[in-house]
Length: 270
Image 1 (cartoon, one colour):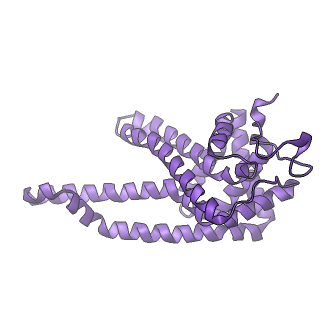
Image 2: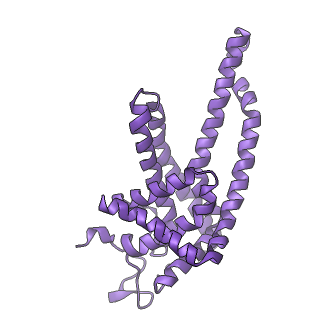
């Protein structure tokens, strides 16, 4: 529990940093605003077409009683729109990070710079880093769906669906939000996807605390947009102070550490 609440604390560290650097907070808002416009437009389109999609998916109901057919298609349209909304919530962070990678890379570096020397990772051109970020985000989304689809089905079970399932859903979504948000700072230390997952699995409580806090804030209308720079800042601080100590004294760091070698998580040290 101490590590869990420590993870929550890193979100507030990010909030404090953004409050002290409002110009960088505004800088980090831009990609989130672009992503918000894209999702709002997509959801409006889906809402206007949900009835047509429901009708297209149920040609077998054409001969049914009118009331029964229309009721079923209205319910199906609501389910289609709800599924689209759920996908939007699950993918908002990933798309925002992809759109704003240069913005958030700079913001994350600035956060670390305020705490000391910035780790010297490998410079990678955008034409290579963006496709890799998309691929990593799709892999993460696959993991999320692996958990959330069974949880969605369990949501219809009385009592459990209204108590246990929402807590598990928040935990799953929170952990994978942390996966996405810490990617920039961990990649700066030479870690690719498998190494990043390993570090976060070794610090589950901290990752859950931070991610669940972000998830709750993101549920507030427009909260994801306003809090996105805060979440990126908090993730950079958490990586530096909790998940992987920042190299100092040049590119090789203390005792000649090569940045291509993943740093061990602090949680495994005495």
